[in-house]
Amino acid sequence: MNDERWRTREAAAMALQIIGEKDCQPMLSFLQKVHDSSNFLEKRAIVAALAHPPILHHSQVVSFSLSVSDAIMKSVANTEPAERKTEGFVALSKGLQYALSVFTAFSPEDGFDLLAKYAVSNDKEIIKIIKSNLGKARIAKTHPVKVSEILSIINKGV
Image (cartoon, rainbow, N blue to C red; front, side):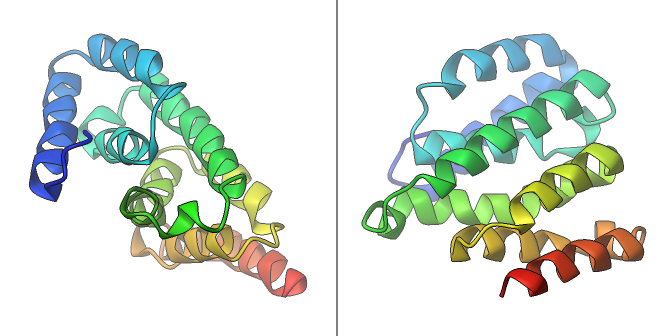
């Protein structure tokens, strides 16, 4: 998950997805262990591994995904400006810019609650992540009212 080559990092996330497809418990146990001490690249791999629709049919995976995403979004908000320029942080941000909408598609109520929680932020990176997710067809087409509500929260803060 920390390799300098993005293809290797992506392979690590895909390997976790394959494990999760067979049995989500070992994947969840591993991710739970590594999450608390993870760096930006590891957090990105965690998010990417979880944003895999075949494993999100398990309610415990969706719940875990949203919980971990909340913790990761808190860490993004607390990241210093200099750290935000690192390759790891950029990769994490890009991963979050799509993954939250995947989780929201599988648990709309909890997912939109998470998006709304961070829509009130003054942090430009957080807002970029939220707006990107709200623009994804997987939730924009199926929940246009909720998307509009959250966008209005963002626009009030601008």
